[in-house]
Image (cartoon, rainbow, N blue to C red; front, top):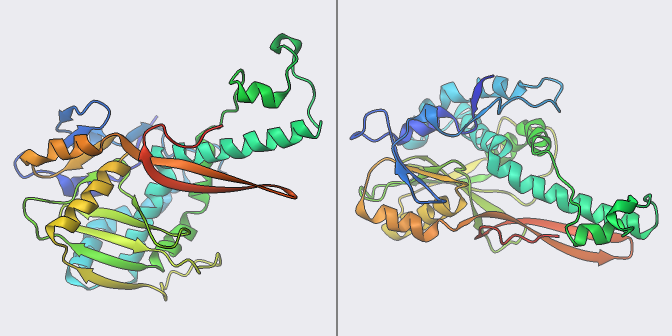
Amino acid sequence: MPLDHYISQVHLKRFYSPKLGKLMYAIRKSDLKEFTPNSNSVCRIEDGSTNAYLREDRIIEEFLKSIEPKYDKSLGKLETGNIDQECIYTIAGFVAFVGACSPAWMRINSAQLKYILNDTAEILDDKGLLPAPPTDLGGAKLTELLNTNKISISVDSKYPQAIGISQIFYYTSFFGNSIWEIFHNEIIDSPFFTSDYPVAIEMTKDPRILNKIIPLSPNLAIRIMPDPNFVREKPDFTFSRFAYRNRFPKRKEVMKINKLIVQCAESLVFYKDHHDWIYKFVAKNSKFRIEPYTTKIKTKNGTLMIFTPRIGEIGTASKY
């Protein structure tokens, strides 16, 4: 079985340290262990790109053939301001791929599907549309069994991955038709980090919109500011609504971006240069990750469920 990388090696290699050769520095958030891996040894899962829910179970690998070979060249275009259609497609496609295939995405969206299934089960149970549970479960109704954790509904994480892969072209178009801020980091002792989920989220004044911050190299990152009026339609790969501006952030803003990158990392944080402040910085932000929060609003016709990913302490997401 192939070992598939859910974070492209072309991305991780940009964070290799000159002092280590073809290695980079890394910290595991769970126990703060430091190590120095290469790009091939991390962010990979056996048969991770294979998905039996899809008609072509490895179709995402075909998509990556149009993205990964152009990654380095596209970063050069961002750095020099020679941004063209190919560059936008490559970077937007990379972001869409991370969102579709990473364990973080699969965990978050599995939880959301579980909330929907739990709520549906409760509605059907309340209306008497479900058969009685087995007598060895005490004759309790399904809702009671769910609420007391005597039984639980599980979701195959490959299913939300399949949804993400099936929408890969839509999200590539969506991200590519947004406004980008391109951060050129000139703070030598504060390079950008990356992680095993390098798509950090950022709250905005509009509760419908979460900005995405993506480190592309130690000195380059982008903030994608989605258009709330973007309509699901045929993908626009001319990127007619794309716009960008260059930013040269001060140290305070670089640190803010790195804080989001660490907090949104699923398990691992990677970086190019070793500095004394990094370990404490990662340790301070290691107890956070992206958690799925759910708001349930009762209506005359049922329940309105609003799903919102947020940065929170690990394990604090809303649960049934």
